[in-house]
Image (cartoon, rainbow, N blue to C red; front, side, top):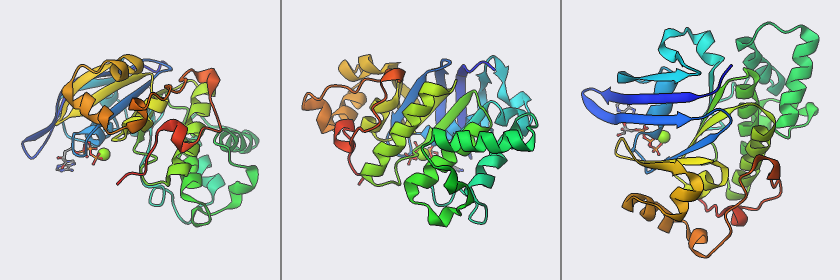
Length: 276
Ligand SMILES: Nc1ncnc2c1ncn2[C@@H]1O[C@H](COP(=O)(O)OP(=O)(O)OP(=O)(O)O)[C@@H](O)[C@H]1O
Ligand SMILES: [Mg+2]
């Protein structure tokens, strides 16, 4: 299934108030678009619109040319999956890790039981969790491990597009780096496009090929990550950049190429700081 996500002229209104205004976004197959912007700018609303959970006033959202609103929930789930911010609330506390990830396989064509087991093991391995974790309940996992389970569950559906909405914001700084590195490993091995949402430009910069900057419901700047970071055109982007000290201390931009995943990057190397 082709992975291009295209958002065209998307306007979302809540009770007559426009919170997303004529937004255009493209996430090309195999690429990561980082969506950055201050709280309330409309980032999550775009994610919810893609998932069919926000009141779209006008505009279209397609994956591989297919309009998502024409699809039923299952067909949509095979194209788009999401990982949410809260690793504590997003997993069913009564289900084992293995069954949580296994449930993600439901969106796919039926697998034989033996294939299911092997696929769950593969997915856990992909997010650096050992097979022994399959029996565990979420409460016995750390926040970072829970987020990795959520990533594995999302990947189980083999979606064309993965949306990650502030998936590291609730985690300690050192754990943020771990989760981002896991995600980079995933991007290197799975065929996937990703919309990566964060208010933190340092985090976005580490993972994205392209960056879109959002403010008050509008995309104010978009382009290849290197260009947006090296020569921001919009004053608001410059403001965001000033909030990331490492970029001004002359730190080398991390190599974003998929083959060069540095699994041992530290938060400092990533320029990540604890949020508030
Ligand atoms: N269900 C809703 N009903 C009414 N207004 C909403 C609803 N959901 C979001 N909004 C409003 O839409 C605007 C954009 O919210 P959104 O959650 O998309 O921002 P965000 O960029 O994701 O912010 P944050 O960084 O805090 O997550 C905000 O003003 C918010 O109050
Ligand atoms: Mg949000």
